[in-house]
Amino acid sequence: MGTLTVWKFDSAGGAAGALDTLERLQKEELIHVNDAAYVYWPEGRKKPKTEQLHNMTGAGALGGSFWGLLFGLIFFVPLLGLAVGAAMGALGGSLAKVGIDDDFIDEVRRNVTPGTSALFVMTSNAVADKVLDRFKGSGASLISTNLSADQEAQLREAFAEVESS
Image (cartoon, rainbow, N blue to C red; front, side):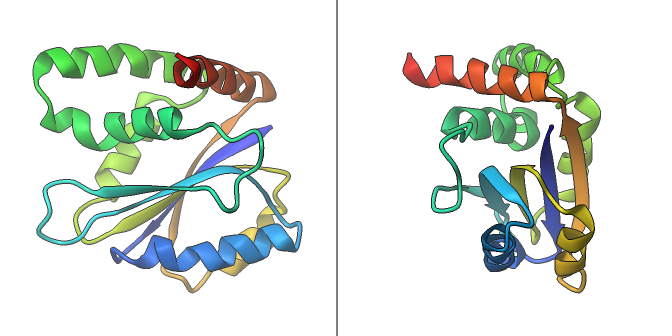
């Protein structure tokens, strides 16, 4: 089973600062990072900036199409016109089939606001108590959704098709 985890930080630089912790956890084999990206939202900006991580992710990475769609649904659909929003909504419906539902999207949208940042990580084989201990004291709050092996495979398949076209 894979887990999509979102660690929200109360500063625009918090997520970038947590990357070292995540990398150490992976080197210590306390977590396997399948793919990751982060969002930072400086005060005064209308929308956040996004970065996909490439140095920590494995061969099974979901890729830029996945992160682009997810970040689009969370942060940009409210800013877009109705027609574009409807198209993104239809794509979002397919994400619900793989465990990323409207409640998850709404919770992230409510919590990741100007002046904050978030680290989005698709992981497996995490030693949860050790991972949580390492993030304590970082000012991070946790939002996550669990994905079954089938749901994770569906995500990989769906986004492999998008990237190959």
